[in-house]
Image (tube, rainbow, N blue to C red):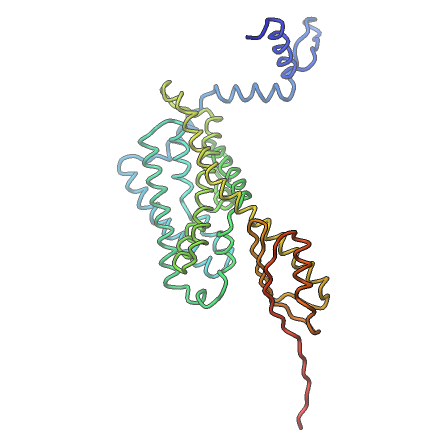
Length: 375
């Protein structure tokens, strides 16, 4: 227990942090406290937690939970749109068309049950939460299945290549930036949901954070036998799912939504912490992916600089790198007009700049030009 004088000092410091210097008014000579920026934020935060959502906001959130015959109609409509949007996304991914993939994001209805999950979480409605999670699981399975079947039917051109289409490959390298995008998009969705005047911005959230394309990429890569890429695409989807539910839940709490029963209100923090824990779980592999990507990028830059110093006339045709635990593997296909210099010199340059063991496998093609005439 702090002595009384210490408690008064700490209380005075806190009041000084929230309030600026005293100001006087003409009508009342007694000094008044003018709130600082921090003070205004704290008071606004307290007001947000204490206010109740209006009827329009409650109605907007309640629309996420259809009941009776409307629920069956919703499930049919949801399933149809998932299949259609997944088909669009699958063909767009295989055709390497970003415009088609964006169109699929606009058609995809997955954001609705995900926001319903967030709303049921903060309102402690367990039955609605289970229903929302069931709809999310249904959409997840259907999207992966559509991607798998589309790849089995239409991916003959992809099988003959050594690399996946760029749009598919883009969904197989999740990182911390994707987590940041998902959190921001989830917060935006949670802010927009109870405000009907801002619902026109909701499709933009669906474009910003991809939900269906990663799931379709899971099915495509799994059918093609790329198991690691399939797992990475699934990790991207789980990242988006966990981050959106967490961020949207927090924004709904700030908008005044909370459990009706006092006992359930005490469980609200536990529910939000569970969603935060889900975000933390996916953040671990994302961090590892990000570190691996950074290391690979640094190694690529190192190899490019070393080749320029080794032979300024040489050019890189193909380059694959793999940096793991400070060790690097480099596979190179280089072409140039001159005879190649000693390869160990290049390996030493890469080793010195990368500061780690290097295994270099290089193939050199000499540029030969022939110009003849026959008459």
